Length: 200
Ligand SMILES: O=c1ccn([C@H]2C[C@H](O)[C@@H](COP(=O)(O)O)O2)c(=O)[nH]1
Image (cartoon, rainbow, N blue to C red):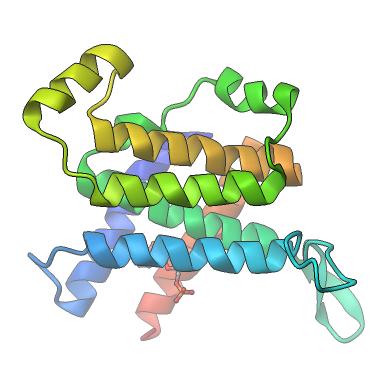
């Protein structure tokens, strides 16, 4: 996954949207956190694993686009990369880009130890850390200590943990590869431009 390229392209798309909608100078961080949470919920809704009340708990990964079948779309992956857009957007807006660079072992680790509390547990944990990264207000002194100890100021570190959990859900929970995620990201990125151009 070429994160550097994706972060730069996300910044460009976001800037295009800001200009198109006349939002220069507006703090869009709160809306972007909410947008991420909405997309995460849509992703879970397509994942279906938590619907203990339903006989159909299979993720929506292959849905025909036409009445006769082919081509197929993958709603689960589409929602997942919508989330990727907003993770990148937040990282850019907050200057937290470094938090997204992860050693592959960090994703591997969970594969070996399994999901504690299942997918639901890891999903809830991810949203908990996203909220922490939004709401906590640590002192300068505390941030310095965190930087020394964990390499990042506190809220950026919480965001990093959320991102690692998110990657784990996609990769270990649903078998996406980093390449597949990137490919789907670029496809949606293109659609997002087209939408703005056609007056979304
Ligand atoms: O500032 C923004 C606003 C939206 N999107 C993209 C991310 C998602 O792919 C898509 C979500 O739009 P809806 O389909 O939920 O309207 O828009 C951005 O990348 N940056």
